[in-house]
Length: 497
Image 1 (spheres, rainbow, N blue to C red):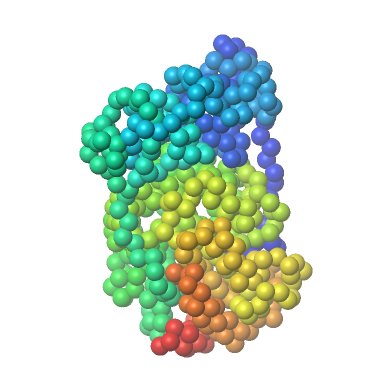
Image 2: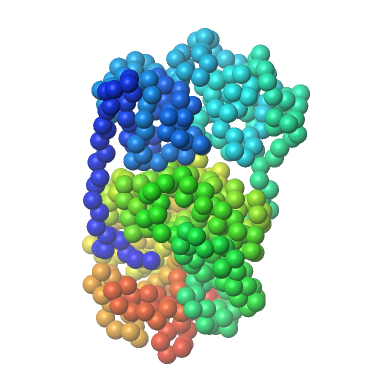
């Protein structure tokens, strides 16, 4: 909700690795993009051994900056070098990672199949069928063994033993019963309009604008139960609205134990789904250090939270739409680091980590408009070539990174100081915008979104803020200080009402 190019500051944090020389073990600091599989190959130590030495219960969940003790590794090796672990970091096809040996032969399928269940890892499945996770990854073309999902069918190699594969047709769990992915009955088709309400004081104006959704933000303190927020859901439904909850927490709390925090957060949003939330946005603007701890910012880390949240939500309410957290649209960082990242490379990090498996809709923000939504150039700013100034290029970017997934605008708005006064310096890029522009451009964006077939949800930022200062939220509000709503009638027309 802020124009980050003019507001953000960030520092680059460089991670170094300290190596223990005693007892033939090393210490490795997890780098952005790494997973336990790659680390195990680097040192020639099994994932299970590393997990055991570090108290890791889920090998799919490690985080950037985490210090790992590597048992049995030669001391003095720098994790940033190729070191002395030989070829194990190249392909891992002959050295495996110490689970049960590999003969070096190319494995083939033919031993049936297994359907991934909640809590499974590729390593645990391998142990169940007396094989190795490397073999399973090879015959199933799994590029990242840390990324499998509930319901995925894993082909087993010839000659495997252990477990019941139910004849090898559809796969099954260890008890022989067929398992399925989490049920998902979320409606992902069509187009619907809503608004973010801070006080929810103008439901009549919202209905008059053709809105059927209200977005409310939930800030979780890490301990409150989901039932404490039931009134937020009930008040929306009592007014006849569907409710999107954008759920954030204390980003500093992630640092102490990310794995545990992700699961606690997942349990909380699962409770909100059970309470009737129609859609849940999992966090918000997590590519910047205002919302995610510096040093841990990466699309891969966020995807771990998204994965846990998706499964918890669907387990409680299969109809709840899961929206990935919308990154802050910005070119400030000129790339991605663990201190902060531009949304384009951050999205690609998410995609590479398998985020598409854990969302119904891609969250997107657009609130830096200074030209009509049809424009692709000509923004009266110092960086007019950047995609984030233009509605079409934002849509094209997000749709291209996650093809086949609908987009959910969880914030879209046009800023104007009319009726308030001069905009603060960080928002001077919008000084030429008028109320007439706001009404016209919002309606035009709705028309484009409806006609595109790409957009599922369009949440106007915002309906009713009257805050106007360093962060001029009131300048985005469609209900103005005098109680009028010029954009309401234009939005209603754009919805064909």
